[in-house]
Length: 184
Ligand code: SF4
Ligand code: SF4
Image 1 (cartoon, rainbow, N blue to C red):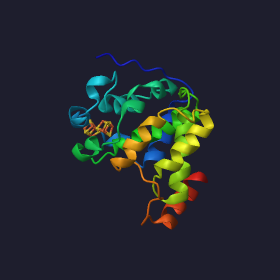
Image 2: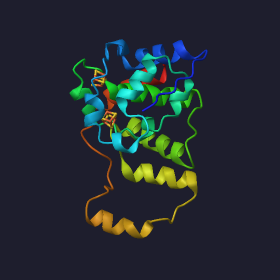
Image 3: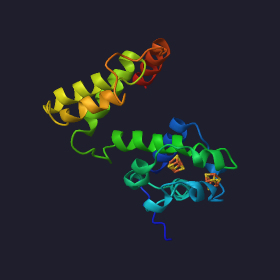
Image 4: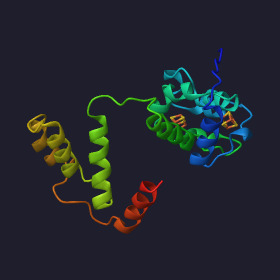
């Protein structure tokens, strides 16, 4: 496969920002491709994980932020488990997502940002996901109160959704994590 690299002003920033955010040293990767061979989404992307690292090593610019794998990666960490150099590829993907949003290389569609905010808000408040409140917040934001309401009784019956908030969460720790990342 031919790898096209565009050099630009952002070159240094991208690789150093990824290394800093992910806490990895990308120069340690020697392209054994064990990560790509084990990656469950390699066959559905134009750039498997080892290629992403190679492109970064070669000085890829902002164009790497539009790679489809950034959003297809399921953070399963198979790549991390297989990597002989211990490179945390899932964190590299997280870092690329952060940079893609920061640099507006990614434009989330529709109500996805609202859904994400509703999800994170409930985790911040309750220490775990609380689907009922999250769905209510999402419906209020999208004005879709009655959509899918017919499924609610059967979800309740099958215990797929709980009326009461989650119990046993370590709220203090979760709050501390949210506070620490919100100051970055
Ligand atoms: S964490 Fe992402 S890149 Fe790594 S194996 Fe899983 S899906 Fe692939
Ligand atoms: S498994 Fe590790 S060393 Fe091998 S290509 Fe992937 S990131 Fe590089």
